Image 1 (cartoon, helix red, strand yellow):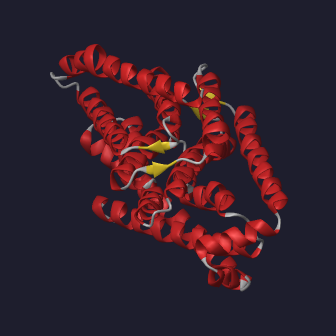
Image 2 (spheres, helix red, strand yellow):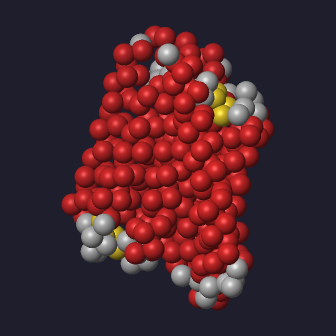
Amino acid sequence: MTLALLFVGGLAALLVGANLLVRGASSLAAALGISPLVIGLTVVAFGTSAPEMAVSVQSAWSGQTDIAVGNVVGSNIFNVLFILGLSALIAPLVVAEQLVRKEVPLMIGASVLLLVLALDGDVSRAEGALLFAGVVAYTVYLIVQARWEGAAASADYDKEFGAQAARRGRHWIYQVAFVVAGLALLVLGSNWLVDGAVQAARLLGLSEVVIGLTIVAAGTSLPEVAASVIAALKGERDIAVGNVVGSNLFNVLAVLGLSSLVSPAGLAVAPALIAFDIPVMIAVMVACLPIFLSGYRIARWEGALFLAYYVFYVTYLILAATEHDVLPAFSRVMLLFVLPLTAVTLGVVAYRSVRAVR
């Protein structure tokens, strides 16, 4: 199979598989009376992260740990900067207060924990088990929260998704079939995509880290793009944000946790990821707090800022990988002008948010 067919076929299988998985799981959740917020943070977020899970686990099993880790880090950066940026440009996004107070700090904490675990150059199986235990505990918490909501949860779900979806959920045999078919397509698509990524890295002379951070990360994040953009277009703007935050949590805790467990010797983490990309991921997530707190919304100009920074990030990766002559000048402009200006802007936004609360 040619390189182009590997990529196109792999991405198509991932998208169709994720779609089937989310559809089946969402209907099953509806039958259980789980609220839209919990569904967004678990079924939708975890389901749209299934491609990242499939690709990273397959890469770790094959010994290509750079792609496994780079895929997660790159996907998380892509989720915040590109997906939220694009969604906010379509329509200013409303941010649920619970996300700002609970899920965003958890997302930042999980990312900092990853950096700490990776400082010695790898994430061992024991450390992977710790990460995976975190997503289990988080999921149990959300399920308990959903049960507390009781009958109100079912009413909210019917209002958000329609009573017809809830009735479909009762035909559980069909939904289980969707889940199984989705998982099968995800495994197939991940095999093709990983093979294509390795071939592309060799042809272009790029490292597997760069391929994982860009091509694979963006490709496996397409389900999140579709879910968040459609939510923004339909006016369900808090779901767009919840999908991204929940996916990022799942990527760090579940995807990297399980990848570490299946890898023969844990996950080796490249020095470039520890020194640059993981700190960038943490910085992007920390930057969400003052923006989210500014009236619990993401304005269009903030979305444009997110998108611009994703372009800067990818440009830097490509210039660094190719050792382009423009790299020193580009780095100086970013360090001396763009980053300080952004820090001042975020500081002003945070100050105004604090004053507004008081």
